[in-house]
Image (tube, rainbow, N blue to C red):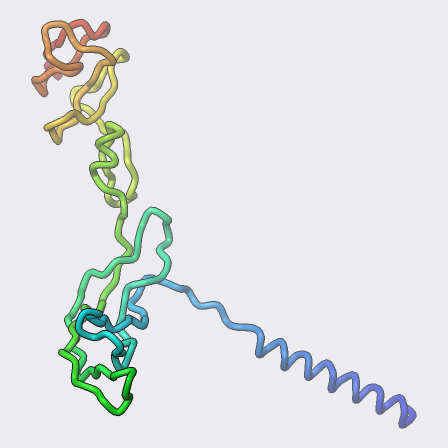
Length: 200
């Protein structure tokens, strides 16, 4: 049988452990996926300083929804796909010289984000500068595929003024103004000296 002193020590140890557990529970937050969705932010009410010198708006900030959160891939950004105008009124302009003096400010309309999606943040021009095309699903610049297929002396890439990729050489092809064949049904030969017609 436990002595009163031992029993008291055991009870104190249990109480200490229980208190620690309670403290840990308050510090622990269940993780929540911070996905792409409309989130409440505060936006400052603009003031025309030429007219509103020594005046402050009331309220100074307004709650509005803006798209925010994480997308699964870094090349995607959380952007709004649906917006709705929201008008706030009345807004006041309060004088700093005399807080009892105020005037009603004009209504303020802001765009409220109501639907968000993760969209590719790469631009087609970025890929074209690399001689590649944009895969909007993967959101990556990928090497284009040429038809007919390029021979070993040339590389398939995009060319200025055309959405169709062509087989391009490192130097200008003899008898042509550029390093690729102007006719889509042609490709440079093995030595990149002339254009040959491809018959499939």
